[in-house]
Image 1 (cartoon, one colour):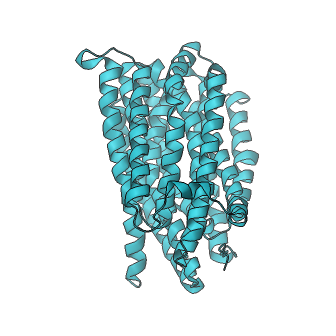
Image 2 (cartoon, rainbow, N blue to C red):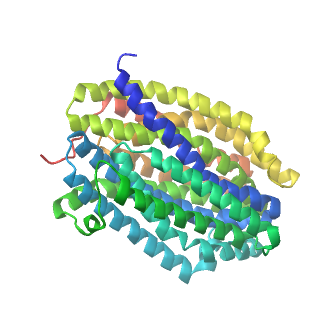
Image 3 (cartoon, rainbow, N blue to C red):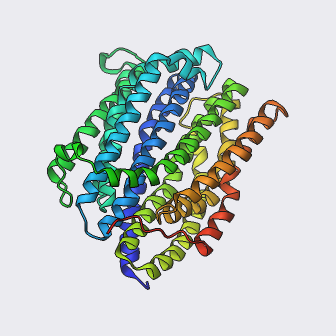
Length: 447
């Protein structure tokens, strides 16, 4: 252990962030498993709506991550004033996204769900779910930005506790309302949506209370969210806008995977939903590594020790490879017991199993390239490198290739899933070259 502070700081954040992300994703997984036992059509309808939620979540994450990059550097310099003003700008951005999405799905619900499937029965179930779930968007935006603010000053445990409470509340209400237990009406997808809405409201209320009353470092007040700084706002958007593009494209790419598979066969959308939810949970290992690395690298740059920044980058890459191997092995061995929780037809189950075998390999390379790009390089201030790489890899290679294989060659859904995830393999090369030989360290703070 050459630097105990490095390992202690990284793992203190990493472990909590992984568990927080796993439990947060378990909210959707609980919906899927309970609805999968209720009806495969309901499962597919919710899966389609969750793709809209996923794109929205990626945009909120970008708004929060952009704040973390800036605020962690100011935190390294022990300057609290700029952190508050950047947090206010990020909150305004998140609320704007919530309002736009709410209006869009309220005005065009059928068209929104119809982007992902042509099956009218699935669309009908998705529209019923969307009618309730759209009210979660505002609460989710506030919670996401508040937790990102806390993460930028190395406070992460509250996010874990919130996720646990959200999961418990959601599962309890789901059990009662989906199946009509204890004399309650059997509401199916509407019951699942009500459970998620109740959990998000409580989660948001606790996050607001903690930030305003208990948070020890920033001591934020409601009035702080009405005060921004023109120069800091410009700095924030200069770095965050490219990240919004990347995260939005990533979310759209994932949604298009559902859309492409859903237009191939109705069975594929259910199989992809069952496989992708487990994959996203295992992916939490890489997501946690990315978030922890971003804070660690940003804070070290703020402290001005550039030699230590490069040293940390080399150590982190070795850790990412180990995380990838563990992730891939876990996904491979968990796939069968998790799929047994779903009430799927034999053909759908076999397809989902094939998807998960492919994704267990993808996990290994993804766990290196994603935290290297989004944690080290982007956390170091060079967001444009990640933007350029994703624009080229996703929209010039992956999506065109997948569309050709799906609708021209008419390949099987298994082959299409390989194409849709190919970028997770070949992005390792530019990530390795940039982080080890490129000039990615950028000081973003103002003196």
